[in-house]
Every structure is written in structure tokens, then in C-alpha cells.
Amino acid sequence: MEYIKTSIEGVWIIEPKVFRDQRGYFYEAWKEAEFNAHIGYDVNFVQDNESCSSYGVLRGLHYQKGDLSQAKLVRVLKGRVLDVAVDLRRNSPTCGKYVAVELTDENKRQFFIPRGFAHGFLVLSDEAIFTYKVDNVYAPQSEASIKWNDPTIGVEWGIDPSKVIVSEKDEKACAFKDAELF
Image 1 (tube, rainbow, N blue to C red):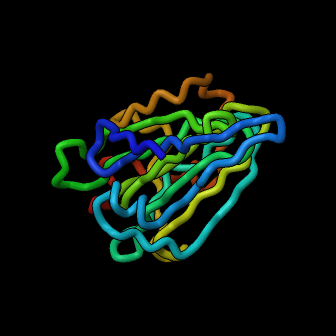
Image 2 (cartoon, rainbow, N blue to C red):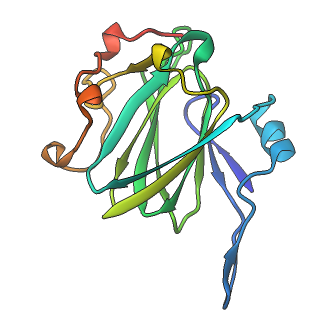
């Protein structure tokens, strides 16, 4: 696997080596020792999640607060998404900045988002199956969201905003200025 540093410290794009032939393909999607060596610390994933969404569905920008925050390793099994990580670490020189990467079933890329970040993704294909590992269990009492279209962050999602579909919960998300930082 190739580990690619992004413009924000701690956020990584991971490109697996894919072996293709007439039968299909094979690749290693997860190798704990290699992953931890490249990230620089041990991440203990405790839960896997999966969602299926249609074009225009935007899930995010989500995070869990405090000790219940989560690191995530995300990828797409089917389709195409724009995946976004927003730095919420108050003492970081990139606080309020974001990194975006396109994840597809073809490029097999993975995106590592450490604790201290908000995360969201937008479906760019007719349908997408999205899966991710987390290093802390889901804790609804610690859950928080920032508006997907917050002007302070200024994420360029790449589609007409009128085509974006969000949950009622995400529609009520707070502005970045009101977010609880790490």
C-alpha cells in the first residue's frame, strides 16, 4: 500500500496495490502493523459500519466530542463519493480547513481521518456503498454535526447545492463558529 500525506497533518490517503487478471482483482484492504507504522501510532479499530446512499446524499459533517471521538478509515465498495475531513483541533495551524478526496470502487482508495476531525461524504454516483472502521463505538450522547455548507469552511462539493439531500438532523447542524473544538 502507498500512504500519501495530505495538506493536513494526520490525514492520509491510502492507495492499495491491486492485482488484476482475467478472474477479477485482489488487494489487501487492511494490515494493522503496516497501517500503524505509517500513521505513527497504534489505532485500535473496534467497529465497522456500512451505508448505502443514492446520488446527492450528503452525510455529514459529523463528529463525536471529547473522549468519545472517533478516528475513521473509510472506503467505497460500490460507486463514487467525495469524502471530506475538517480539522477541528483548536491548536492546529489548519483548524477549520478541510481535505477532500474522491473515493471510488475503481480507485480503491481509503481515507484515514484521525480523532479531532469532522467527517462527511457526498454521493456522486447513482448509488454508493460506503464502509468505514472506527476506533470508538458510536455514542449518540456525544454526537455533533457542522452544516455541510458552512461558509467558514467553504467545502467545494462539486454539485449543484439544490441537488444535495441531507437528513433532518444534518439540516439542523451547527455553524463551524459554534462547533465544539478539540
